[in-house]
Structure formats: structure tokens, C-alpha cells
Length: 415
Image (cartoon, rainbow, N blue to C red; front, side, top):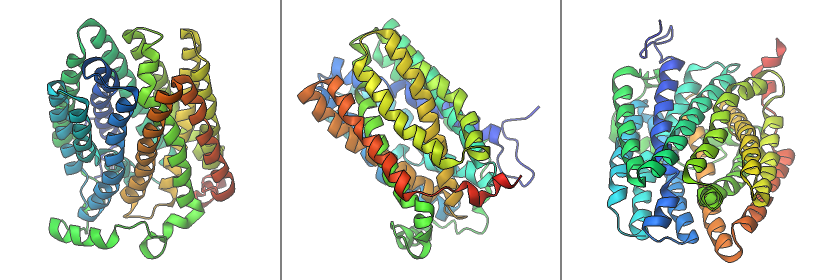
């Protein structure tokens, strides 16, 4: 029997302990998140544009903070403190949301939320990268993404169900309780990675080192950013997630115009549950068969198809088809992209590179939410989906022209 605090032979945390922690954190975060736009519309009187700004603010602050937190984690050689602070802060914020009286208050709170929670994703992904060999990164990151999606799936369903049976406030309370459980699990059962070996743990000195290191330079320590077109992949990720998260910010509102809140949760469950099942096989496919680039391209072109299906949907059945396809598309772009970044990032810079990816995603998200909110107010939700569908195609062209395959340097195919 494997305990939650089991380690690998060299004392690093095991995949099982990392993934259980990640699953619970994802469960905790998604329960409140998916209903925030609906809550803002129903209780705070937010317009479509204001609802998109609320989500965009969260993404915008996270886009900056995730690189800072990821890099600071590298300098300190510590992951667990960032995981703990992220989830403890989230628990408090979820309790505060029902006390707010206006959309402006919620926007300001989302800015705080974005800063506090930004350290979790790059640090948990950095943990997996540090304990994985090059030929296992795609599979192991796929497994991590699977647990994220499964947490999102269960949380989305429960969030919609609770909102229908009780009220939105109960969903916020549940998210806070689960976030506290994640903190307890992290403190007592998750081992620190070996990144702390030989690292200076003095916070002041780490900040000085961070100041010297923190720049998007493509020379010196940042030279790896040009390898295989990594910097251009960040551009394509920005474009894709501008479209994806821009539409997602208002997606629950669109779903709620066609089906009940419970069905909104079920539709999210279909998508995210399938993501969880597909992440690991897709990661293995990128490791052993297709490589990173074809997987990424399918994710980009597939996003355009999914957004077009949303725009054409007038029935539950077509929404189910779109959500099913979206699961495979998301598994491709997220797992293939994470493995691509992990292939290139040098030792000691895993969190920094993942932080840049997370920042590209969230910076795209804040840009997309602003664009989506404006388009939705001016032209309606369906036209919003059609217009945003153009952005992933541009991202795919960037990948085709500027990004090179990395699977050749992992030597996976030599077997």
C-alpha cells in the first residue's frame, strides 16, 4: 500500500502524493469559480462586459504573479510554502465573496485572488518536472493535468447542483472548506522536492537574485527561450487562450440561457471529466508516437471548431457534442504544450518556464475576456464565439512557421 507521503528512491515526493494534492486543489478552486459570472449577474447586477472583466481581472493579475511566484520558488528552492499560501488565501477569499455588495468590489477581490493563488500552478507543475525523466514528462504531466480535469469535473457538477438545490453561497462555502483540506494535505503529507538542495533559503537574498533573473531575456540565462521556438509557442498559447478563456468567461451564462443550472454543471462535467480521462493517453501519445507539435496543432485547430459549434448550438445535444470535442482539444493543447515547455526548460528553471507558460495563458485570458465582453455586448454571444474562433487559427500558423519539434532531443524514439 502506498501512503500519501510516499517518496521516490531519492527522497522526492511521489506522483501519487502530488496528484492527490493537485486533484483536491482543483476541486476546491472550480466549485466557486464556475458560478462567479452567474453570481455576478444574478446578485450584483453585472452586465456581460462587467462579468467578463471580473474574470479577466483574475487572469490578468495571475499572469504577472505566476512568473514571479514560480521564479521566487526556484530561487528559494521551496514549493510547499507557495502551495500552502495559495490555497489558504483562496479559502479566505471564497468566504468573502458572498459579503460583497457590488461588481466593483468583486473585481477588486479577484485581483487579490489572482495574486495569492498564482503560485500553485507553476509550483505543482515544477514538482512533476523535477521528478520526471525526459521520456516520462509528457505522461507524468498528462497525469497531473488529468487530476486537474477530474477535480474540475466533479467540482463543476457539484457547483451547479448546489446552486440549484440551495444557493450560490453554499458553493463558495464548499470551495473554502475544500481549500482548507488541501492546505492540511500539503502540510502533513506532501514532501518537498529536491530543488531545495544547494539553494539559498534566505528570503532577502532570494529577492535580490530574483531581481537579476526576472526578465524575458532571450540571451544569457534566458537563452533557452529561443530553443525550438519556445518564445513563439508562448505567443501561440496567448492567442489560443485569448479565445478559449474569453469565451469561457461567459460560457456558463450562455449555457444558462439554454438549460438549467444543474445542466450547466453537467455540461462542464462532460468536458472536464473526459479531459481527465484523455490527458494521460494524449501525453503518452506525444511522448511515443506523434511528438509535441502535431498534438499542439490539433489543439489549436480544434479550438476553432469547438467555438464554432457553440455559436451554432440551439439544443442540449449539440452542446454535448461541442463539450465532448472540447475535452480532447484541451487535452492536446495543454498536455502537448506543457511537455514541450518541460522538454526545453533547463534544470533549475522548470518553474520559471512553466510560469511563462501560465502567464501566456492568463495574459491571453485577460485580453480575451475584455474582447469577449465587448463583442458580446455589441453583437451578442453567438457572434462572440465566431469572432474569437479566428485567434487559434493564427496561433496554429505561428506554430507551423516558427516552432520546431522537441521529441527528437528527448531520444524517446530511439527505442
